[in-house]
Image (tube, rainbow, N blue to C red):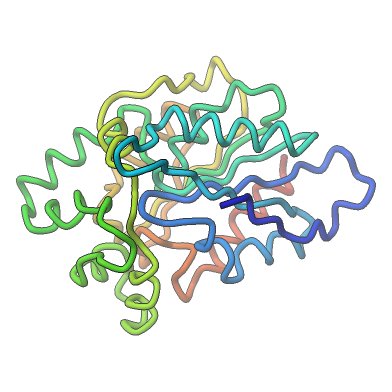
Length: 254
């Protein structure tokens, strides 16, 4: 599937204004940004595109390296400065691209940390084996996600009907990418890349715990901010404008 462009509202002739490249998380797609989040950013003068990762055929699924290459190609097509906005697995891809010359910074939402998921996954497997089992099945075909993931992926304020609607769109993640994400990643340290990084965590996130988000922020020389009543898919929850507001405030400060 090709990239999903958004209107370049507000860019005008200001060549220094970066475009945004939205990178979705595991078992999701470019659609997670298209229910108001990306449009709000465009209306505020920060337009861009949402990349759909190509996961490859079932007998030869793409790994994280392929996702990084796809995002790097999208950066090149942008033809100017870019700020990466990544969620979860997409945030891990963004972190691997912080040395790209055109990248001016990155906003990381519920990010997989540079250490990978091995520590968080192991802890989850012991603390809640059933939830861990559900989370490891993100490679199942779209529409076959376990209904139990509703309470895993969303906060308590998410209307159940809306949560089920989004859950029906999820699935089909590359098992190779999921396995690769368990281990440490070649993410440059903050002192090396020198880019501004925004790190946002969700207070009710059961997949990426607060300590993992904090370690990610520390790696990049910054502090994490948390939205207390939100779940992992924060850009889809009723209070998503709060997330967009924090992102826009940070972008204006660049």
